[in-house]
Length: 126
Image (cartoon, rainbow, N blue to C red; front, side):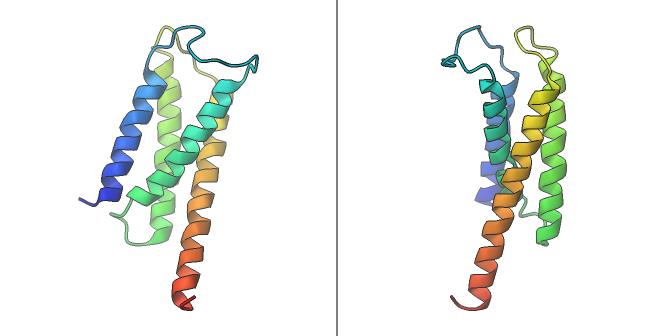
C-alpha cells in the first residue's frame, strides 16, 4: 500500500473523529465571530479534497482520481452532517454542508493546478 493512501486514510479517520465527537459549549475561543464552524468546515474539507486525490493512487488516470475525490468528499460531507444529527451536542446545518462543498472544491482545484504545473514542467524539462 502506498504511503499516500495511508495518509489519506488517516486523514479521513481523523476527520470523522473531529466532526462526530461531542462538543462542549465554549470549548473553542471564537472571539465573537459567530460562524467559526463554517470556516473550520471549509478548511477541513479543502484538505479532504486535496488528500482524496493524493491518496487515490489506485486509479491510474488523473480524471478518475478527481472524480473519486469529488464523490468521496461529497459522500463524506453528507454522511458527517447526517451523523451529527445523532450527537446530542451537534446539529446538522445546510450551511455547514455548503462550507464542506466549497472547501472540497477548493482542495480539488488546488491539487489539479499543482498537478498540471508539475506535468507541464516535466513535459518541457523546466
